[in-house]
Image 1 (spheres, rainbow, N blue to C red):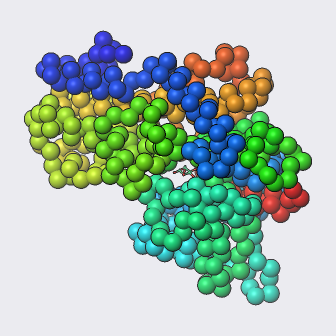
Image 2 (cartoon, helix red, strand yellow):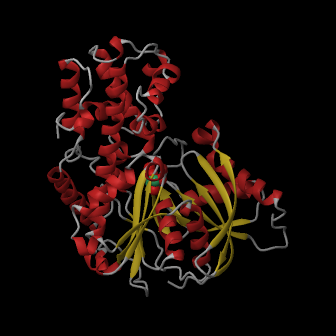
Image 3 (tube, rainbow, N blue to C red):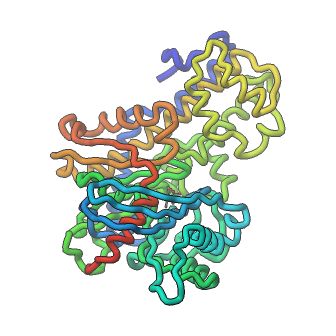
Length: 465
Ligand code: BGC
């Protein structure tokens, strides 16, 4: 596509400005052919990760080998540790696919994010139980809880696993290579809190399980949020590296850790100088390459790099910047979401962001149109690339698409980024035969990760394999 597409034509632009936009459009708009090549490589990487440990796509066995039936009842507790928030939940399952959730949210303090994470979590669990008069006494057995942990962990059992690396901004020293359940269990012990972590799941696994409780056809759980990743049910005979016992169900949920795709050689994803700049300055260079092009934590920063590239060539804002615009991470992805759909005649939403948030006076209409195009390009590339993982995974077990299946998706990008869902689904439809595609039901699995941990705690109570 080029500026022939009217969305990328800037009314009143100089030839130099339009040429720069055309250059960006040629970098950010990906043809189906290009996507097809990336899907092929993604699939190859999936196979590689199924065959052996230590590969780019980790394809981590979750030890979850069952599906909830939807008829289970009872009350279970869970801890959901995400990127910015921690939730402690009490979930009551109604036996008809529904769950009533009571939860308390705790915002992770900077100290918790950088140092005292597990003590902070233990303290929050204590607060939750204490305030509801649920704290187990010395005479009572420890209270079982599920833990959702949204970082890459190599599971060693249903309730243990070692942290591979931090992603998405958390950076607590001394945790990589250690069992995260042990670290939390020790922190709970320090508080004298009688809680036992009986299940450890990734947030994508939780999302899948909560979708499966409502809907027996759920096959895949995805997060498109601050970070990105997916989990799906795989045939155990296809997991060549799995040396454990074969479960009676014959299947196991795999946590793909797909955010790492292409991180080793940077050769398939459409890296632009703006992506490379972001990667270099991130806390995890040469890691999570796919995640950095798709997810909410990063899109604002890619846009900021593009904007500064234009400013420095005097093609935008007459070459003016501000202290805020010069600061890394100063453009929140939510500004892009609102900019991409600003249809007011003067682009007033964008004007607000430029003049109030970024503190740059007197933007012209051309400047604002350029902002809008940047927001559209960055978002559209993210949604199109998101389809890559979805297609590769669904095409891995094509026979499942002979009947209806559900894909549960959660995360701020999917829920809020304008047209993300539409572009994603449309792109997927280009790569899956029509009759199969019509069997796929993409649903928003809102807040599924925490409920999923409670389901795993429920399943763990009855595990025999
Ligand atoms: C983490 C995954 C997680 C995903 C979505 C990624 O950064 O590595 O474990 O599932 O974010 O939260």
